[in-house]
Amino acid sequence: MVVTGGTCVTPSGTVEVDLGVRDGRVVALGSLAGDAHASRFDARGLLILPGIIDSQVHLREPGLEHKETISSGTAAALLGGVTTVLDMPNTIPPTTTPEALADKVARVSGRSWTDIAFFVGATPGNASTLGALERLPGCAGVKLFMGSSTGSLLVHEEAALAEAMSHGTRRMAVHAEDEARLRARRHLAETSAGDVRAHPVWRDEQTARLATDRCLRLARRFGRRVHILHVTTAEELDALAEHRDLATIEVTPQHLTLAAPDCYERLGTLAQMNPPIRDARHREALWSAIRSGLVDVVGSDHAPHSLEEKRRPYPQSPSGMPGVQTLLPLMLTHVHEGRLSLSRLVDLTAAGPARVYGMARKGRIAAGMDADLTLVDPKRRVRLTNAMMRTACGWSPFDGFETVGFPVAAFLRGRLAMCDGELVGEPSGHLVMFEENLPATSLVM
Ligand code: DOR
Image (cartoon, rainbow, N blue to C red; front, side):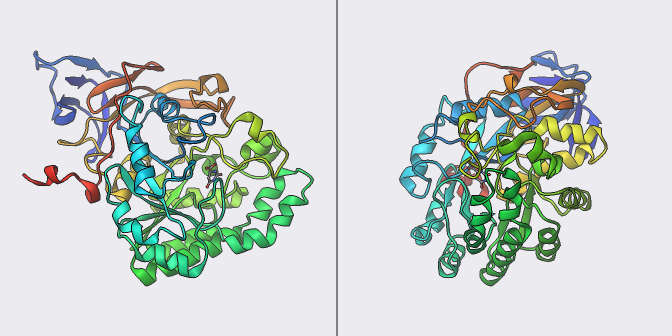
């Protein structure tokens, strides 16, 4: 198959080049229009990005299928131009044992619209198993919640944190909020008379900073690589800049796009997430860290809850918002508005997650890589609406938001999987392979 006439964002630059694809891989970049034997896809006028990877997605299956399923969440992903997702472990049961991981892996075939892998959760009791767990097929690595968020996963005592950090070697994904401070200040939420503007006051900057500092201290002690998810404060970024050898950094499109207090006044509890959306000073610090190269990954933290649940009075309302379908349109709009370049966008949403988590054959358009391609019409203007959202929760905090630049087609390992806002064929997602869990057969050459 040949994709002709598009403008490809490749490691060698953004170039008008045809792409040759065979057996699901990119085999050639060049002038291939003369190849009479190949089937063709005409990409004139379109940008061709490596398939977008969203490395922070809560698919809610098993146990919370009314919020999302593997099928609904990956359908939403693909319609948003995302071809690979990494799923978070705070399901019911949580993904903390080989059996729970195997159960998720068994749900992929014929149901996932994107390639996929699963994080396992650290608990105070499973540290000694993490080294083996993180190497199982389909495992993206270990996720550790230092502060309570949605679900029961939590590791906050010093000895338990040290145990978890000292078992296993893969980069560990960390939710950094300080549990002791959250508990000591919970009354600020309880006495807010239902006012969600108390959320970033309760879970304040210091809550994030304390946990990130502690995580960095332990990571240094054990030589453990860590990936700090959804970083939200200027002060954490300053600290993280001193630890580039061990720590990588993720931010979300919502922290880059929304700001307090406006988001809470406009959206109420729909804007409630952990760690919270903060004021414009922090948002600008995140942009500055995007520009300086400090940030490694933009991931959506797609965390769907039903509208009924979100309408409960704060703080009974759950934290989290959907985002896997809107990640790319939002970030393309930021490109259009001049906040980052297209190549930096690709670095943050494809090459970055592939590098941080050691994915095999993902993240770049290059010979021998999976032919995961996201085709974008850079001029297309789309007003996002709740009705467009394929997530089972049926809403977006960006309902009504005008975007410029939109994914119009996607190939998954060389097969057209989305075109003009429609899913094509059947769900054909596979497990992602990582450097750390390649099957033995692929190591024998
Ligand atoms: O707001 C959040 N929601 N933050 C998290 O860490 C978890 C997520 C969820 O699962 O709902």
